[in-house]
Length: 177
Image 1 (tube, rainbow, N blue to C red):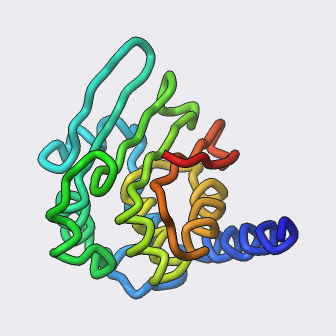
Image 2 (cartoon, rainbow, N blue to C red):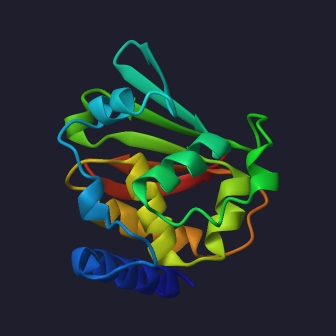
């Protein structure tokens, strides 16, 4: 099982390396979604994101319905988020949260993905999962982290949301919400 997971991460990483030259069934690639400062990206798209600061942590939240609208604006296929499911807004089913630890340029982030979001996007495969998460993590250096997270998401049926831990732009592990 561990060997299969490593293989999935390797394949997903290879897909991401080739991503700029591949269309993922969308009108934009992850390379087109980059910006130098991720926090500036959230501020520029503040109609979709809520941003709060506490100490050296910056927390960014987005509801599934706002996430669907953001993907539509960016030209990324959002059909994995059905209208029925995006109307649910409870904290356990329908909100995605990104917690940056310290400076965003250091790549230390925890990504909270809802059960609803995970179950819907897992049906569409690694490429779609990676492109969608790329819309949440703008900037350079996310290729390996996105590949690892995309491989986990493509795995299937989720009973709980997940928190994906990324340190230094490298996916480390996940735990249940």
